[in-house]
Length: 371
Image (cartoon, rainbow, N blue to C red; front, side, top):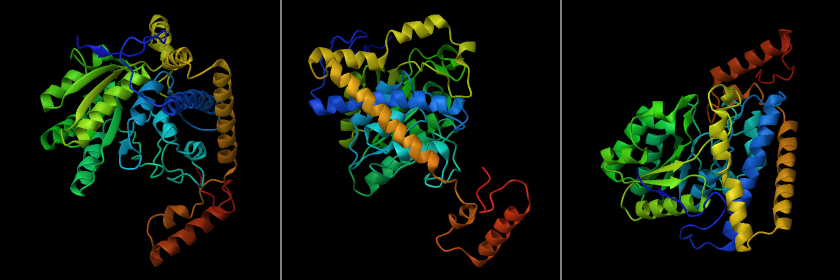
Protein backbone atom coordinates (compact mmCIF):
# COMPACT_ATOMS: atom_id res chain seq x y z
CA UNK A 1 0.00 0.00 0.00
CA UNK A 2 1.24 3.49 -0.88
CA UNK A 3 2.28 5.56 2.14
CA UNK A 4 -0.36 8.07 3.29
CA UNK A 5 1.14 11.39 4.35
CA UNK A 6 0.07 12.59 7.79
CA UNK A 7 1.29 15.55 9.86
CA UNK A 8 -1.30 15.64 12.67
CA UNK A 9 -2.69 12.43 14.14
CA UNK A 10 -6.37 12.04 15.14
CA UNK A 11 -5.61 13.30 18.66
CA UNK A 12 -4.14 16.53 17.26
CA UNK A 13 -0.52 15.57 17.98
CA UNK A 14 2.25 16.45 15.55
CA UNK A 15 3.65 13.30 13.91
CA UNK A 16 5.29 14.89 10.88
CA UNK A 17 6.92 18.12 9.79
CA UNK A 18 4.30 20.85 9.68
CA UNK A 19 4.40 23.52 6.96
CA UNK A 20 5.55 26.92 8.13
CA UNK A 21 2.39 29.00 8.18
CA UNK A 22 1.61 32.34 9.76
CA UNK A 23 -0.72 32.37 12.75
CA UNK A 24 -3.25 34.34 10.68
CA UNK A 25 -3.29 31.62 8.02
CA UNK A 26 -3.79 28.85 10.56
CA UNK A 27 -6.68 30.75 12.14
CA UNK A 28 -8.18 31.43 8.72
CA UNK A 29 -8.08 27.73 7.93
CA UNK A 30 -9.63 26.82 11.26
CA UNK A 31 -12.35 29.45 10.93
CA UNK A 32 -13.20 28.26 7.41
CA UNK A 33 -13.60 24.70 8.70
CA UNK A 34 -15.82 25.87 11.56
CA UNK A 35 -18.03 27.91 9.23
CA UNK A 36 -18.24 25.02 6.77
CA UNK A 37 -19.33 22.57 9.49
CA UNK A 38 -21.94 24.92 10.89
CA UNK A 39 -23.24 26.03 7.49
CA UNK A 40 -23.60 22.40 6.53
CA UNK A 41 -25.72 21.77 9.62
CA UNK A 42 -27.92 24.80 8.93
CA UNK A 43 -28.46 23.81 5.28
CA UNK A 44 -29.58 20.35 6.35
CA UNK A 45 -32.09 21.88 8.77
CA UNK A 46 -33.31 24.33 6.14
CA UNK A 47 -33.92 21.48 3.71
CA UNK A 48 -35.66 19.32 6.30
CA UNK A 49 -37.96 22.22 7.20
CA UNK A 50 -38.82 22.85 3.54
CA UNK A 51 -37.14 26.24 3.29
CA UNK A 52 -34.64 25.09 0.64
CA UNK A 53 -35.01 22.13 -1.66
CA UNK A 54 -31.63 20.42 -1.56
CA UNK A 55 -28.12 20.46 -0.15
CA UNK A 56 -24.94 18.38 -0.15
CA UNK A 57 -23.44 17.40 3.23
CA UNK A 58 -19.85 18.54 3.81
CA UNK A 59 -19.26 17.19 7.31
CA UNK A 60 -16.03 15.20 7.44
CA UNK A 61 -14.62 16.69 4.22
CA UNK A 62 -13.67 20.12 5.60
CA UNK A 63 -9.93 19.48 5.82
CA UNK A 64 -9.68 18.42 2.16
CA UNK A 65 -11.50 21.51 0.88
CA UNK A 66 -9.87 24.07 3.16
CA UNK A 67 -6.35 22.64 3.02
CA UNK A 68 -6.47 22.62 -0.78
CA UNK A 69 -8.00 26.09 -1.03
CA UNK A 70 -5.31 27.55 1.22
CA UNK A 71 -2.67 26.41 -1.25
CA UNK A 72 -4.23 28.37 -4.14
CA UNK A 73 -3.52 31.98 -5.12
CA UNK A 74 -6.79 33.85 -5.54
CA UNK A 75 -5.13 36.47 -7.76
CA UNK A 76 -4.05 34.06 -10.51
CA UNK A 77 -5.51 30.57 -10.02
CA UNK A 78 -8.84 28.90 -10.79
CA UNK A 79 -10.77 26.24 -8.91
CA UNK A 80 -13.14 23.73 -10.54
CA UNK A 81 -14.76 22.31 -7.40
CA UNK A 82 -17.00 19.38 -6.70
CA UNK A 83 -20.38 19.96 -5.10
CA UNK A 84 -18.94 18.95 -1.69
CA UNK A 85 -16.57 21.91 -1.42
CA UNK A 86 -18.22 24.61 0.67
CA UNK A 87 -14.89 25.06 2.47
CA UNK A 88 -13.03 26.15 -0.66
CA UNK A 89 -15.37 29.09 -1.22
CA UNK A 90 -15.54 29.99 2.46
CA UNK A 91 -11.74 30.01 2.79
CA UNK A 92 -11.49 32.41 -0.15
CA UNK A 93 -14.08 34.76 1.36
CA UNK A 94 -16.97 34.13 -0.98
CA UNK A 95 -19.92 35.85 0.67
CA UNK A 96 -22.12 33.50 2.68
CA UNK A 97 -25.08 35.54 1.52
CA UNK A 98 -24.11 34.88 -2.11
CA UNK A 99 -23.85 31.16 -1.33
CA UNK A 100 -27.28 31.21 0.30
CA UNK A 101 -28.70 33.11 -2.69
CA UNK A 102 -27.83 30.01 -4.72
CA UNK A 103 -29.34 27.71 -2.09
CA UNK A 104 -32.62 29.63 -2.32
CA UNK A 105 -32.43 30.25 -6.09
CA UNK A 106 -33.52 33.85 -5.55
CA UNK A 107 -33.29 36.88 -7.83
CA UNK A 108 -29.67 37.58 -6.83
CA UNK A 109 -28.49 34.02 -7.42
CA UNK A 110 -25.87 34.04 -10.20
CA UNK A 111 -27.89 31.43 -12.09
CA UNK A 112 -31.28 33.04 -11.36
CA UNK A 113 -32.52 29.82 -9.79
CA UNK A 114 -31.89 27.74 -12.91
CA UNK A 115 -29.22 25.58 -11.34
CA UNK A 116 -29.85 23.22 -8.46
CA UNK A 117 -28.93 24.50 -5.00
CA UNK A 118 -25.22 23.93 -4.16
CA UNK A 119 -24.20 24.42 -7.80
CA UNK A 120 -22.17 27.53 -7.11
CA UNK A 121 -20.29 29.67 -9.62
CA UNK A 122 -18.27 32.77 -8.76
CA UNK A 123 -15.76 35.06 -10.44
CA UNK A 124 -14.77 36.95 -7.30
CA UNK A 125 -12.91 36.92 -4.95
CA UNK A 126 -11.41 34.21 -7.20
CA UNK A 127 -12.76 32.25 -10.16
CA UNK A 128 -14.79 29.16 -9.28
CA UNK A 129 -15.95 27.20 -12.32
CA UNK A 130 -19.64 26.35 -12.16
CA UNK A 131 -20.31 23.14 -10.26
CA UNK A 132 -21.97 20.52 -12.43
CA UNK A 133 -24.11 17.55 -11.44
CA UNK A 134 -22.88 15.06 -14.09
CA UNK A 135 -19.95 13.25 -12.48
CA UNK A 136 -16.49 14.02 -13.81
CA UNK A 137 -17.48 16.46 -16.55
CA UNK A 138 -15.55 19.31 -14.92
CA UNK A 139 -12.18 17.52 -15.05
CA UNK A 140 -11.50 18.07 -18.77
CA UNK A 141 -12.95 21.56 -18.37
CA UNK A 142 -10.36 22.24 -15.65
CA UNK A 143 -7.62 21.06 -17.99
CA UNK A 144 -8.96 23.46 -20.62
CA UNK A 145 -8.90 26.33 -18.12
CA UNK A 146 -5.31 25.48 -17.18
CA UNK A 147 -4.15 25.27 -20.79
CA UNK A 148 -5.93 28.52 -21.67
CA UNK A 149 -4.08 30.33 -18.89
CA UNK A 150 -0.79 28.96 -20.17
CA UNK A 151 -1.64 29.93 -23.75
CA UNK A 152 -2.29 33.49 -22.60
CA UNK A 153 1.12 33.63 -20.96
CA UNK A 154 -0.26 33.49 -17.40
CA UNK A 155 1.27 31.39 -14.64
CA UNK A 156 -2.04 30.31 -13.13
CA UNK A 157 -2.91 26.79 -11.97
CA UNK A 158 -6.34 25.15 -11.96
CA UNK A 159 -7.30 22.86 -9.08
CA UNK A 160 -10.16 20.45 -9.65
CA UNK A 161 -11.70 18.22 -6.98
CA UNK A 162 -13.96 15.18 -7.30
CA UNK A 163 -15.08 12.14 -5.34
CA UNK A 164 -13.88 8.56 -5.59
CA UNK A 165 -16.87 7.84 -7.82
CA UNK A 166 -15.58 10.44 -10.25
CA UNK A 167 -12.55 8.27 -10.99
CA UNK A 168 -14.85 5.87 -12.86
CA UNK A 169 -16.08 8.62 -15.18
CA UNK A 170 -15.11 9.34 -18.76
CA UNK A 171 -14.10 12.82 -17.64
CA UNK A 172 -11.45 11.37 -15.32
CA UNK A 173 -9.86 9.45 -18.19
CA UNK A 174 -10.12 12.34 -20.64
CA UNK A 175 -8.91 14.92 -18.15
CA UNK A 176 -5.88 13.02 -16.89
CA UNK A 177 -4.91 11.78 -20.35
CA UNK A 178 -5.11 15.27 -21.87
CA UNK A 179 -3.28 16.87 -18.93
CA UNK A 180 -0.55 14.22 -18.97
CA UNK A 181 0.08 14.54 -22.71
CA UNK A 182 0.22 18.34 -22.66
CA UNK A 183 1.75 18.82 -19.16
CA UNK A 184 -1.17 21.06 -18.25
CA UNK A 185 -0.82 23.13 -15.06
CA UNK A 186 -3.67 21.40 -13.24
CA UNK A 187 -4.00 19.64 -9.89
CA UNK A 188 -6.44 16.73 -9.66
CA UNK A 189 -7.71 16.31 -6.09
CA UNK A 190 -9.73 13.17 -5.36
CA UNK A 191 -11.79 13.26 -2.18
CA UNK A 192 -11.76 9.54 -1.49
CA UNK A 193 -14.69 9.64 0.91
CA UNK A 194 -15.32 5.88 0.71
CA UNK A 195 -18.75 6.04 -0.93
CA UNK A 196 -20.15 7.11 -4.31
CA UNK A 197 -23.71 7.50 -3.09
CA UNK A 198 -24.25 3.88 -1.91
CA UNK A 199 -21.40 2.30 -3.92
CA UNK A 200 -18.46 1.45 -1.62
CA UNK A 201 -14.87 1.98 -2.72
CA UNK A 202 -14.15 -1.75 -3.08
CA UNK A 203 -16.94 -1.96 -5.67
CA UNK A 204 -15.71 1.22 -7.37
CA UNK A 205 -12.24 0.06 -8.36
CA UNK A 206 -9.91 -2.93 -8.15
CA UNK A 207 -6.87 -0.62 -7.93
CA UNK A 208 -4.87 -0.76 -4.73
CA UNK A 209 -5.24 3.03 -4.41
CA UNK A 210 -6.66 5.87 -6.45
CA UNK A 211 -3.43 7.85 -6.68
CA UNK A 212 -1.80 4.92 -8.51
CA UNK A 213 -4.19 5.49 -11.42
CA UNK A 214 -2.13 8.52 -12.42
CA UNK A 215 0.73 6.27 -13.59
CA UNK A 216 -1.22 5.17 -16.65
CA UNK A 217 -1.39 8.79 -17.79
CA UNK A 218 2.14 9.82 -16.91
CA UNK A 219 0.80 11.84 -13.98
CA UNK A 220 2.54 11.47 -10.60
CA UNK A 221 0.29 10.57 -7.67
CA UNK A 222 0.40 11.08 -3.93
CA UNK A 223 -1.80 9.84 -1.10
CA UNK A 224 -2.61 12.02 1.91
CA UNK A 225 -4.68 11.83 5.10
CA UNK A 226 -7.71 13.85 4.04
CA UNK A 227 -8.69 14.60 7.64
CA UNK A 228 -5.36 16.37 8.25
CA UNK A 229 -5.69 19.91 6.91
CA UNK A 230 -1.97 20.64 7.18
CA UNK A 231 -1.03 17.50 5.26
CA UNK A 232 -3.53 18.36 2.53
CA UNK A 233 -2.14 21.89 2.37
CA UNK A 234 1.39 20.55 2.00
CA UNK A 235 0.73 18.13 -0.86
CA UNK A 236 -1.49 20.56 -2.77
CA UNK A 237 1.11 23.33 -2.34
CA UNK A 238 3.80 21.05 -3.75
CA UNK A 239 1.56 20.06 -6.66
CA UNK A 240 0.77 23.72 -7.40
CA UNK A 241 4.48 24.56 -7.32
CA UNK A 242 5.20 21.77 -9.82
CA UNK A 243 2.40 22.91 -12.11
CA UNK A 244 3.43 26.55 -11.95
CA UNK A 245 7.01 25.60 -12.82
CA UNK A 246 5.83 23.86 -15.98
CA UNK A 247 6.33 20.33 -14.61
CA UNK A 248 2.78 19.21 -15.30
CA UNK A 249 -0.18 17.82 -13.37
CA UNK A 250 -0.45 15.81 -10.15
CA UNK A 251 -3.13 13.37 -8.94
CA UNK A 252 -3.76 13.62 -5.19
CA UNK A 253 -5.83 11.08 -3.29
CA UNK A 254 -7.12 12.54 -0.02
CA UNK A 255 -8.40 9.67 2.14
CA UNK A 256 -11.41 10.82 4.14
CA UNK A 257 -15.04 9.96 4.90
CA UNK A 258 -18.26 11.86 4.34
CA UNK A 259 -20.09 11.72 7.65
CA UNK A 260 -23.55 12.27 6.22
CA UNK A 261 -25.56 11.29 3.21
CA UNK A 262 -24.51 11.81 -0.37
CA UNK A 263 -27.15 14.55 -0.41
CA UNK A 264 -30.18 15.56 1.61
CA UNK A 265 -32.14 13.12 -0.58
CA UNK A 266 -30.07 10.18 0.66
CA UNK A 267 -30.36 7.98 3.76
CA UNK A 268 -26.83 6.69 4.54
CA UNK A 269 -28.05 4.55 7.46
CA UNK A 270 -29.30 2.08 4.85
CA UNK A 271 -25.80 1.23 3.66
CA UNK A 272 -23.09 2.70 5.96
CA UNK A 273 -22.29 0.56 8.98
CA UNK A 274 -22.41 2.26 12.38
CA UNK A 275 -18.94 0.84 13.09
CA UNK A 276 -17.48 2.64 10.07
CA UNK A 277 -19.02 5.94 11.14
CA UNK A 278 -17.67 5.50 14.67
CA UNK A 279 -14.21 4.74 13.34
CA UNK A 280 -14.14 7.91 11.25
CA UNK A 281 -15.80 10.07 13.91
CA UNK A 282 -12.68 9.47 15.98
CA UNK A 283 -10.68 11.03 13.12
CA UNK A 284 -12.82 14.19 12.94
CA UNK A 285 -10.82 16.78 10.94
CA UNK A 286 -12.24 19.79 12.79
CA UNK A 287 -11.50 18.37 16.24
CA UNK A 288 -8.02 17.37 15.05
CA UNK A 289 -6.94 20.85 13.94
CA UNK A 290 -8.62 22.45 16.96
CA UNK A 291 -6.65 20.27 19.38
CA UNK A 292 -3.45 20.94 17.45
CA UNK A 293 -3.92 24.71 17.51
CA UNK A 294 -4.84 24.66 21.20
CA UNK A 295 -1.67 22.70 21.90
CA UNK A 296 0.41 25.14 19.85
CA UNK A 297 -1.04 28.15 21.64
CA UNK A 298 -2.60 29.52 18.44
CA UNK A 299 -6.08 29.03 19.90
CA UNK A 300 -7.47 29.20 23.41
CA UNK A 301 -10.90 28.08 24.67
CA UNK A 302 -12.27 31.62 24.57
CA UNK A 303 -11.22 32.01 20.93
CA UNK A 304 -12.90 28.70 20.07
CA UNK A 305 -16.20 29.92 21.51
CA UNK A 306 -15.88 33.32 19.86
CA UNK A 307 -15.20 31.87 16.40
CA UNK A 308 -18.17 29.52 16.70
CA UNK A 309 -20.47 32.33 17.84
CA UNK A 310 -19.29 34.61 15.02
CA UNK A 311 -19.84 31.82 12.50
CA UNK A 312 -23.40 31.23 13.72
CA UNK A 313 -24.21 34.93 13.57
CA UNK A 314 -22.77 35.33 10.07
CA UNK A 315 -24.65 32.27 8.78
CA UNK A 316 -27.88 33.40 10.38
CA UNK A 317 -27.59 36.85 8.80
CA UNK A 318 -26.86 35.33 5.38
CA UNK A 319 -29.89 33.05 5.57
CA UNK A 320 -32.16 35.89 6.68
CA UNK A 321 -30.97 38.12 3.83
CA UNK A 322 -31.25 35.44 1.14
CA UNK A 323 -34.66 34.28 2.32
CA UNK A 324 -36.05 37.81 2.11
CA UNK A 325 -35.14 38.28 -1.55
CA UNK A 326 -37.76 37.66 -4.23
CA UNK A 327 -37.68 34.82 -6.71
CA UNK A 328 -36.35 35.59 -10.20
CA UNK A 329 -38.86 37.33 -12.44
CA UNK A 330 -40.31 35.29 -15.26
CA UNK A 331 -38.91 37.83 -17.74
CA UNK A 332 -35.35 36.70 -16.92
CA UNK A 333 -35.98 33.53 -18.95
CA UNK A 334 -35.81 35.87 -21.95
CA UNK A 335 -33.69 38.83 -20.86
CA UNK A 336 -30.76 36.70 -19.64
CA UNK A 337 -30.36 35.04 -23.04
CA UNK A 338 -29.09 37.95 -25.17
CA UNK A 339 -27.25 41.19 -24.43
CA UNK A 340 -29.86 42.93 -26.57
CA UNK A 341 -33.23 41.20 -26.69
CA UNK A 342 -34.46 40.52 -30.27
CA UNK A 343 -37.93 41.69 -31.21
CA UNK A 344 -39.36 38.18 -31.51
CA UNK A 345 -38.25 37.34 -27.95
CA UNK A 346 -39.69 40.58 -26.64
CA UNK A 347 -43.05 39.54 -28.12
CA UNK A 348 -42.75 36.06 -26.60
CA UNK A 349 -41.77 37.52 -23.21
CA UNK A 350 -44.75 39.87 -23.17
CA UNK A 351 -47.16 37.12 -24.20
CA UNK A 352 -45.74 34.68 -21.64
CA UNK A 353 -45.94 37.10 -18.72
CA UNK A 354 -49.48 38.11 -19.64
CA UNK A 355 -50.48 34.46 -19.95
CA UNK A 356 -49.17 33.61 -16.49
CA UNK A 357 -50.81 36.69 -15.01
CA UNK A 358 -54.25 35.73 -16.27
CA UNK A 359 -54.50 31.97 -16.19
CA UNK A 360 -55.62 31.85 -12.55
CA UNK A 361 -53.42 28.99 -11.35
CA UNK A 362 -51.77 30.70 -8.44
CA UNK A 363 -48.81 32.18 -10.31
CA UNK A 364 -47.73 35.61 -9.11
CA UNK A 365 -49.50 38.51 -10.77
CA UNK A 366 -46.08 40.07 -11.27
CA UNK A 367 -45.08 37.24 -13.57
CA UNK A 368 -42.86 35.61 -10.97
CA UNK A 369 -40.84 32.66 -12.20
CA UNK A 370 -43.01 29.61 -11.25
CA UNK A 371 -40.28 27.57 -9.57
